[in-house]
Amino acid sequence: MQKWIFDIRSRPFFVLAMSFLLVTLLVYSKTTQQFDESTALFFQSIAGNSSLDLFMQSVTEAGDVFYMLAFAGVLTIIKKTRKAGVVLMILLVLTTLLTGYIKCGVDRDKPNLPFLGNPFLIEATQDTFALFCEGGANASFPSGHASRATVFGMVLGFVLSQKFPRGCYLLLLYPILMSISRIYVLQHFPMDVIGGAILGILLTGVVTKKAKLGKIFESKT
Image 1 (tube, rainbow, N blue to C red):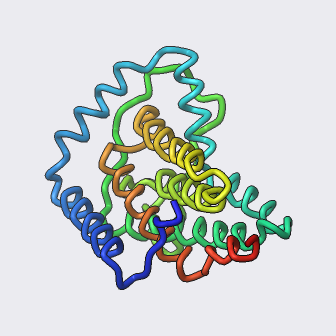
Image 2: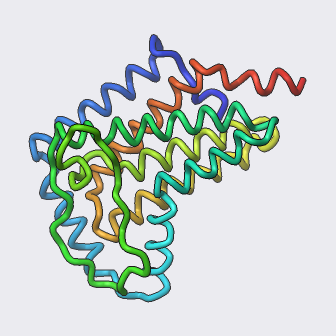
């Protein structure tokens, strides 16, 4: 996972930036609307299993920015993980704000479908925040939860990559499950979480490189 960080002037950055732009244009032009709506209808139809509903609701709530910031705050207190905590905190704030402003620009509504599963134990939290921008919290593309979960999984995976070179990739299950849960609880369409994940990878790769997070390995050698 240490190869997942890159400069702005690099092929990975260019590919990811173009991919995000393409997905954004497809969503904005409503090219993927039929696919997104049919997928949302499918997930609406399979809701109702109490165990699965509870699991998906728990996963989606774990993507709340305040929980993640609290975790990052704990990392900053510990000397060995302080730099990782600061980088993670910066990325979480940046991702939350950026997705909010992009939502204002794309202005795509969330799925207008009622969740037919078991009632939420906790009311669904606001996805993103955008200062001086109305409607950002109620818009759909890109998913703030998917972006933050990708950031979270990648930063922690990167930090653990030297000690657990293979096991660190298990942390990528977190953004995958988060993305599925957002579609399951009808808060997002598939293209929303795809766009959010791409944006999360893009930001993490660049910020992690700029912050020289890789130096944490040099101090251990």
